[in-house]
Image (cartoon, rainbow, N blue to C red; front, side):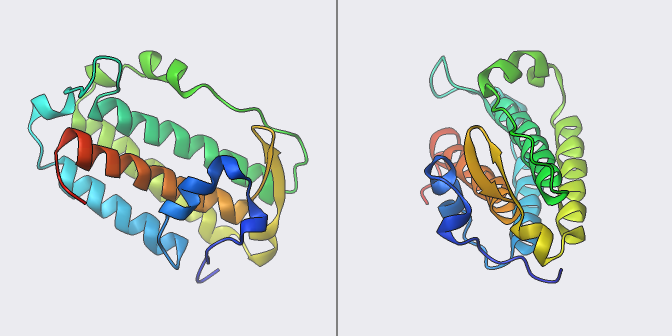
Length: 176
């Protein structure tokens, strides 16, 4: 598959609409690669104290957000694999907040987190490169909503873009 194009609204439900709309890429793989380059380059420029800053006491810090992105990407890619292989099992949702504590993000170095992030991103891109048009159009039910494999890819991209915007606005005070 050379280009993975933007999904049609019929390929996903409202629960991921904002993420998919945030994924402003005509080609999924190019968008995933561009975000990876951005994340690696910009995170390595930050000071250690910026990674653990919380703009509110109950909000995640940057390390936790990055690990959340890795966890979510793995889960969305797993769903894409299952649906591409025509597995009709309805897949459950997950409580993202329950993943943060056990992730031990704050005891990890940023280099360790970014190494894992890069490995997961490369695996996701390899997986989506392996899908042909038929596989990309396969659909399944996850979190009680129907979604196609293509839309799951754009969900990964848009979910990441959403969190990168939050990091820029609320943690680094960079106007968009």
